Length: 130
Picture (tube, rainbow, N blue to C red):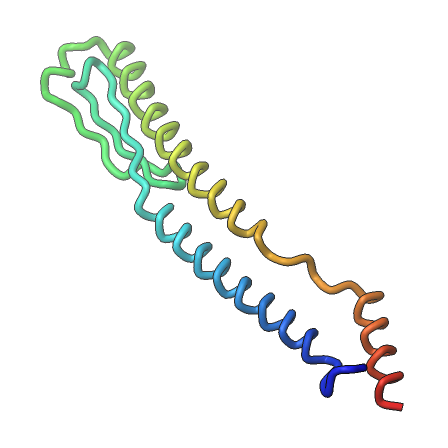
């Protein structure tokens, strides 16, 4: 015997997909906010150079202890570059972890309805209406 509303199961399925989509979108928004808060830190010259990079790898701050000026220019540039790279790498790792969690959450989404499924359901409903 058919149910009084043959499309009730389909509506329930669509509502479930919508709820899951809303949850995933909310989680993606939170991931984006978390990436904005990432601060990767790096140092060079035994801590005399401090660098902070954001979640996109852009430099936020560079600090030099006055004692770092004792280094020759080549050593200073190498140490500054090392600190920058460490900060960007740290920020990149944190960002990648956030992205991987967001991707895992997005994988929860149900598969989209394909044309054949929809066609079969429409034909079934049409037969039940007759």
